[in-house]
Image (cartoon, rainbow, N blue to C red; front, side):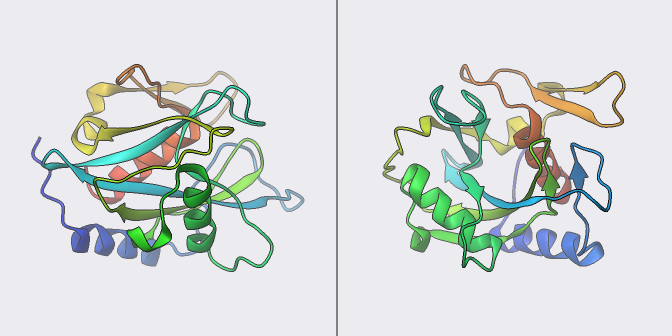
Length: 199
């Protein structure tokens, strides 16, 4: 499937999706009620133009990190005190985890929030990262950095969607790619991004 996405088109798609439902928390992995307390977080969904096509950049977390050991994720984490936008959080975390200078990221927009099973309200921020790049990996948190082509991610034959017994929400898991398994909240954000782009 040829992917002919421009940065302007991606930005317009993101803006239009949020305009349609600006207060949406998108997908929630848990049941929410008035007493649910959620923590603030943001991730960067890094787009890179590599080998004549768009890729998404992912990290695999180390087996020693406090949470989500060994899982594939986007760079990101909890909001720090004083941060007033998801963009600030996402760019700081990307700098800390993989050494991406915020000045080397062109932010294109946001996706709807996703509420995780660990009670975080995560705002995914989409940005184009200058490529090629030299990364400075936070060795305690990140075991590997890798990319997956957007065209491969958009091919529904490359992923499963499981209905979980006793739960109203499904689980998305991709087939292994280059030895890595993309699933759970990161896979959900990936699919949300693809859906916004109409892929």
